[in-house]
Amino acid sequence: MDIKIGKETWDPDATSEEVEERKKNCPHQWALGVGLEGIHKDGVSYDREMLNDMLDREGAEEGLKSCLRLFFENNTSDQIGECVKQIREIKAWFLSQTMFKFINSSLLFAVDSKTVGVCMTDFEPNPNPNPNPNPNPNLNPNPESLSSLILTLIGGVYMIDFEHVWPSDTADTCYLKGLDQLDNLLVTFMIYGMAPVSHDKGMCCKVHSKTPNRLERASSWS
Image (cartoon, rainbow, N blue to C red):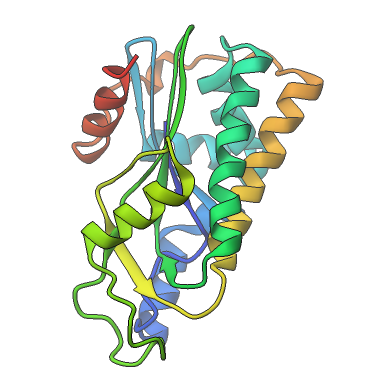
């Protein structure tokens, strides 16, 4: 499962018109703080359009719960708890860092009957950042240094496909709120269980070209 984290889907130098266009194009992510890119489960793939249709039918909040249930329905509370643990490890790092702002990046959830993994994806320091976004002259947000930094601090949570990371001098509250959204929903599932999911066979198809590569790669880890 590929989930975008953070309600903001535009770079800091975006014009007001570009911001409004992005809000219009990603209304559920703007409302929820997370956006569903794709789910691959038991050989069946659901792309972003299909998952957004579910959110349209059920409402953003209830639709998000249904999509998460679809992915986690055959997993135990312990496995969901392991995902929560890894989300909180990521959150701990974000609470401590004020060097980077992550725009429209993802968490990749890889879960089967034996293993659980949460990976951070879609990060790449912006090649043409605002010339003075951060007064720290020692900040050098290149892919190698950023990946090394986060791997060192988080440990065991792997970051791939860097895109749209900007220098910053404040905590990334937008990303943190997205993590809180997922944390709260998964904890609710652990405590109260999950209602059965109604499977719509008409939703089954190949995920769009960008998503299955990540999801299939994650499947190969287990």
